[in-house]
Amino acid sequence: MERMERRKFIQGFFAASAVAAIMTPSALLAKEEAKKVLRGKNALTYDEAVKAITGDKAPTDSDKVSLTVPEIAENGAVVPVKIKVESAMTEAEHVKAIHVLSTKNGNARCADVMLTPMNGKGYFATRIKLGGTQDVVALVEMSDGSFLRAAKPVKVTIGGCG
Amino acid sequence: MRKVLLSFVFLSTVAMLQLNAGEQFAMSDADRAMYKEMLENNPADIYVEEGGELFEKLGDEAALAKFLGVTEKELPKYIAGFPRYVKSLGNVVGLDQVLQAMQVEQGKEKTKLKSGKMFSMLAYVKSIANDEVLNIDVAADEHIKAAYALGEKTFMTARGGRGLSCNSCHSADIIGQVLRTQPLPDLGEAAVAGTWPAYRMTKSSLRSPQRRFQGCMKNALLKVIPIGSKEMVALEVYIAKLAADKKKKMAIPGLKR
Amino acid sequence: MAAEARKSMIKIKPKKFKVGDTVKVDFIVIHPMDTGLKKDKKTGEVKPEHYIDNITFSLDGKPFTTMKVWETVSTNPYFSVNLKVPGKGKITVDYTDNTGEKNSKSKKLKPKG
Image 1 (cartoon, one colour):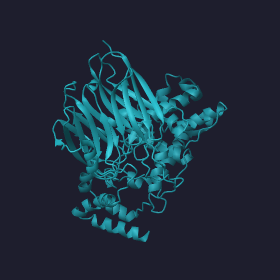
Image 2 (cartoon, helix red, strand yellow):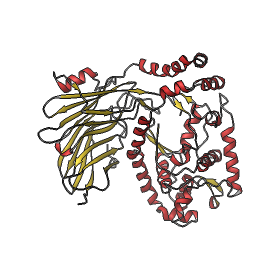
Image 3 (cartoon, helix red, strand yellow):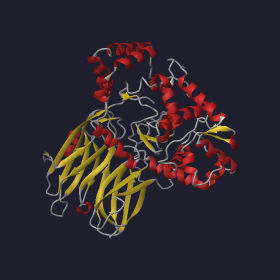
Image 4 (tube, chains in turn brown, yellow, blue):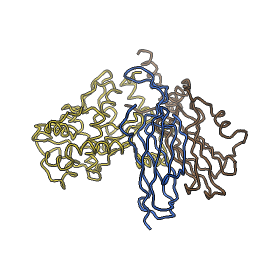
């Protein structure tokens, strides 16, 4: 208790300067990133997941994929993710699958969505858990076998009271 | 891990954590828009539907209106004025307590006030008043007057390990300051009384306003006040007036951090 | 585990649409999506993995979207895809979780014109 009180006092003292005003909340982020990444049965790193999905093909970063995530997620339990892919969605040319991944979760995979021309548009939205600040990645498989990619960083705050 | 707050450190920290920290961790308009969109698919909608099914078993709007002595047409506006003094119960009560009383009257098993089922029923009943302006009248009678006074007293009383009161974090001059990366809200402007029960993302569950007050108290090291107690209902009266003063509307269920 | 059917909702947006329009099909379901890495606060025991792992969206029995879902998706999850409306029909969402539990939810697709 005494040690925590002293830490809080020091944090409060440092908050007096402009630099420290940024430092204090950063202490919350840094502490959370230092936490060991929990690994369960489905544990797979981001690189392992990408390889499992694309095989030897290298994905290309593409503007055709629009990935919408919050810059700052109010909490890591429910992070909204929206993915749109420019495509005619015909038998000849369509989005075959949208894979949602994160770069630092113990299991990098979130969802693998197999679409068909019946969808009409290349689109998928969901809400995912993020164990800490990291990138969310949309890996898109097109009907011609190519892979497109879009990634965005999400700052996860674990603040608030109650 | 207990969240310790030394009041003097807290006050100086809050005073110092001005725009810089606020800017770095404040959500952008685009972010806020994304969270607002989530309201369209709020998991709470399913709990509200469940609450509706439970409420149907009690006799629906017709039975509630009859119990409260109003017409079904007047019911939505009447609901938006709670907590109220209910003569047949001899107390200022919340709608959850009214539902419990109806259960007793019908010889049914009482649902605990602090339970998922009651939060769902409360959410459904409050949602009947959606879009109505909150209209609590704290001068309506002696009882509600007393409840309001008690609510204000409870809000202002410093207690607990760190000598904090609700007002320590929710007073007019503290509003907007950043505490633990979150800007402290104006409880009236945020329409707490009109947006709770709400789905809490960090708890993945539907929570009633009094349940939320309990979470807040726990964090501030204030001894938690029981749901449905005189003081807790009084607090709800005080919070409802804050929203009514700002002409806020009922919008249940809410979606919160 | 014998269960009352799991609670879920299918929403179609916009409410008014015609044949040939592309609508949004939203599916939301109450499910713990436990990762197997968290402890139950009351018992102190680790809550075992319990998450939805497969979802199929069909129109009149014809699948138009299938999903492989992982435990990293939020509790009480939400899934949204588009559907180009070919005509009147019934949308069905069939889903299973890692315990083998199977569930289903349907909603009528009613285009106007």
